[in-house]
Length: 316
Image (cartoon, rainbow, N blue to C red; front, top):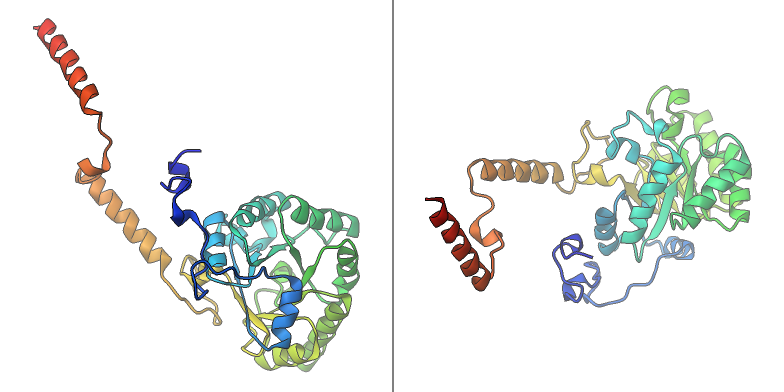
């Protein structure tokens, strides 16, 4: 393996060791997060954090920050691949990114989103795809959108020893049925359906459930009703945990942010500025400088200079 492929570090460079910035000591070992850990966090009323990640570098940084759950969401269709929505992404595309993220994660619980079409057609295909995420991708939990109507499927996946994260409320894979990305559960009948969905998922045995795009009051009711930890996104602060899309967190999206998004950094600004400065330095011959260039050993350079001098003399 080349030095360059390791970020310029030699294999025995101490900087290559893993350290979590959330720990009191750089060498402190933090326990692996499991589905049982999530239940314990809910019981202790300790908020759970979750972020998406789609590649090795991001996953490693998020993991080392102490985030408990990392989701390889089908949102990578838009954030990484430039699709219009999540409906176009395939199992193979999802699996490619899950594998990359797995290599960067040591502590967090790794979730993989079941993409549209991977579980809607029949239970057998759904089980096969869920198994691929675990066997090939190294995922520890798969996420399935839908409430009551997915309960039987979720039981079958769990029976195959694969933990499941449910997802109700605004389910992006149902965007065409919902007529757009709209807050769900604003009317009494919608609230009743959400409660039924949440209870059905809880009884099916989900490890946790995402509540997306629902009123704060409804999310609070669901969180108090179910045993499974609830992870909110646009669902208010009463959920057991919160998830955001990493690209929203650091301003790497190219659309106006949703109401619930809070930006914690401006990676777009950093990247754009770095690219512009690189271009300017190359155009003005300021990069690379002599100290950023490799040189011949003195003996080799002296010998080469001698050869070149003889060639010049012969050419006269």
